[in-house]
Length: 363
Image (cartoon, rainbow, N blue to C red; front, side, top):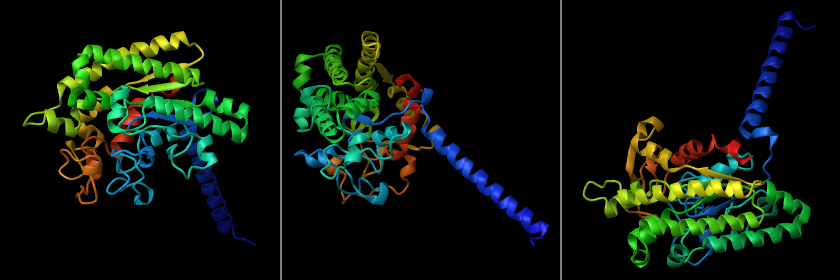
């Protein structure tokens, strides 16, 4: 017969295991719970290099990063084509909506049906609202990305039937993150658009392209649509180096252009929400949180704000950030991985600041 001590000890162990089990369950539920017990079958992402998980690997462009040191902190240290040392916002957002931890590239030839059913990214690094931006870089434009989504719908319907396909399309989350390359590259670095437009008229043009895209996405069945504003693009290291003078200051003209576009986008999103009452159009402000990170880095655990981790940190991006470049050992101290794209840590911080209080607005 067991002693009283053995019985009490056994009971104590059972209580500990039970509490541990309950804690795990509660943690899982809280990390996946959405307003009103809603569920999200899939996440779809359109945009540029901030949310491209590797689509550019499979097209003929120089805008690639499927080589070291990119992906250094990704699972297995594999360069996947994500423009960072690890995960990018498309992955983080999919996890925040309780769908999956890694959002694959639609063009990946090894993609499986289950990957398709739970969402993909159609984004292409170097793309913009302005069709010329994508043409200059030989990447997939927003129009091309919508064509891929149309193709996706056909594939899924063939696999699971029209009814399930309709449910996936209508209940999923759609994220759009694009526009930085229009201002930082097409307008600031080439003469083509400056001949035609000043900043106010160029941002009007970008808005018309954005509106056209969002209307078409709605027409294809998207009902829960979130659009990221353009961040303070004038403060990324490469823009400081090229146009920031000897002290590498933030480029105010680019930041002002971003702010002007963002204000117009904010009101357009409100108008679209009123026009389509059965849909949710959610404006996601990334500009102000990004500025707060730059101005108050210690608040978020950073201490290097104007250089990337790769090479000198001043200009290296894409093919210039390659296996021959040294990289910093203290990546968590850096806001930027290369001279244009943030580190995984920054993406996590920024995604939380932008999205956490907005998730309820999608439902």
